[in-house]
Amino acid sequence: MPALSYRMLNIGGLPAGLLGLEELFAELYDAGYGPADENLHKALIAGVKKHNFIPAPALPEYGRALCMEYARYCRQKRSGKAAAARDYGTWRGYPREQIPWFPTIAPELCNDCGACLDTCAREVFERDENGHVWVAEPFLCLVGCCFCKSVCEPKAIHLPGQEILKNYREKM
Ligand code: SF4
Ligand code: SF4
Image (cartoon, rainbow, N blue to C red; front, side):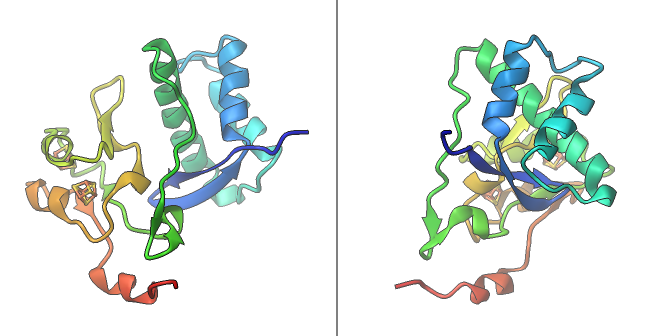
């Protein structure tokens, strides 16, 4: 049996590594699930649980993040863009996905102005089908950068403090 794909998702502002996500998305897409399908949420959670542990209190956040990611997958498929797992590279010798440096957006403060999206050169932000800005690719974020935070007038963007980076010494 081929090895399952592995990728990180931004679940409620925290990185979570998931096995088999690409295979699950492809299976649901081929089965005709659209982003607005009423059974999508249940199918995603059941599919992810086959290979991953989801703590019960985190189920709503997982459901929300998985539905958003699946909607993005469908957009990419329909536009003909390959929805392939990305290689995020390394930082100071550590896999990029191990560095918890990326923006999170406080939805109650964000007015979807798009300033962060226009400022970031790394395609970290996207708009969903309802026009809401979200952090679609957290691990494309440049470690140590704070640009988007400085242009967000309602102060909806949070980033970690620079001091956390001291925990990651250069790997030889
Ligand atoms: S700049 Fe701030 S308010 Fe504007 S879309 Fe980005 S997060 Fe939302
Ligand atoms: S911190 Fe910099 S690289 Fe990261 S999302 Fe914001 S603007 Fe983009």
